[in-house]
Image (cartoon, rainbow, N blue to C red):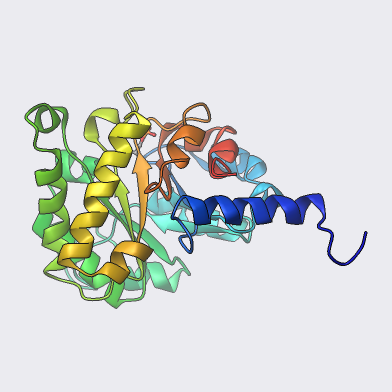
Length: 272
Ligand SMILES: O=C[C@H](O)COP(=O)(O)O
């Protein structure tokens, strides 16, 4: 092979780069999160770790798994080197009399670099307000964590034509509390699509991602709008991931149910 020729792997990489340029995603690394929610035990975690093979993860993609608090260290000790571990929650204060809570500094102490905040289950089941999610986000960032910040409307809100109003309100609460967005990934998760098997169509998802990016450009800054990653979440599977990943403003996924199964590996490379 002459110096100018490219191996199949290098050609594949060049093509992916070209595709990203064309789709306007240049510079935004595709990021897939697996949110295990309150599922699994050590045995099932061992099984997940077996299919989460380092060599099968594209070198230019990022993978983060959201693990139940009790197993954070267990997973941290066993995960492949190119997979990061996220907590599924942390508190707005860093220490004190808050029985049952976990602080950002405790996560950092275990070597955990990511936390998922504002998931719709936290908002709905545990009554977390926009304000609380914003406070948690601010402290997590201050303590050096990276945050996957979840936003999304309910079915009633969508049917009432309030999708944009809701996600803009949720992000606005955070805008009021933080300045630096470089360690924030947004996850747009329509509540009606979570765990229901009812995925947003690529067009529906793209429409909200695009609206969010425009809102961010106007209210935070153009640079942030261009660089911030916006994941889609809600019944993502190996079957629908490719079409979703091809949308201009979808920079990855936050996956629930399918992240517990080997098909997660296909979702991780859905942009290839
Ligand atoms: O955080 C993940 C979302 O809640 C999506 O869950 P799902 O993929 O099971 O619908």
